Image (tube, helix red, strand yellow):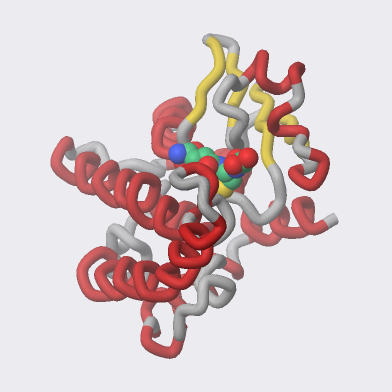
Length: 205
Ligand SMILES: N[C@@H](CCC(=O)N[C@@H](CS)C(=O)NCC(=O)O)C(=O)O
């Protein structure tokens, strides 16, 4: 039995969808970011990073979305959420890492400037840059990374819920999604999946 800590509207959605896709036994524990629950003493004992997602497993605690997604996929091989072929799996990890370390970080400059600077003027400048950096990231994804119908082509993989999750931030980040027809078609395809519908309803409730 797994326990996923999440907050609505965050990158934890990718892990939540993936747990649902594979039919894993899990419970989902919602944190209230408005009350700063991610930094409560009790939560910091579980995840000292003060972030979501956190996945509590029988083997210990996992953080970092790419690691959690790969763990879930490998724990439920029948769901075939990662390719067998080593090179194809490395491609999955490459996309996952890009979403985690570049795209998510570009997005975080909108609300979380205090991670990188102290001056109010620096925050405003970082925020102004977000539409440009997110547009550039997603132009690359649209052109080079999304094979269609799924990210890796015919096989639905852990890249799909991850791209879907980060892609939900585009409008709020000031990106003109009309320039991203493949990404938007992928979002629609994802929104039709029962696992996605179930998790979205749960996170909105
Ligand atoms: N690299 C981590 C990033 C985790 C992360 O930054 N999560 C955000 C939500 S999208 C968070 O918990 N933010 C809370 C905070 O900054 O206080 C991952 O991919 O899992």
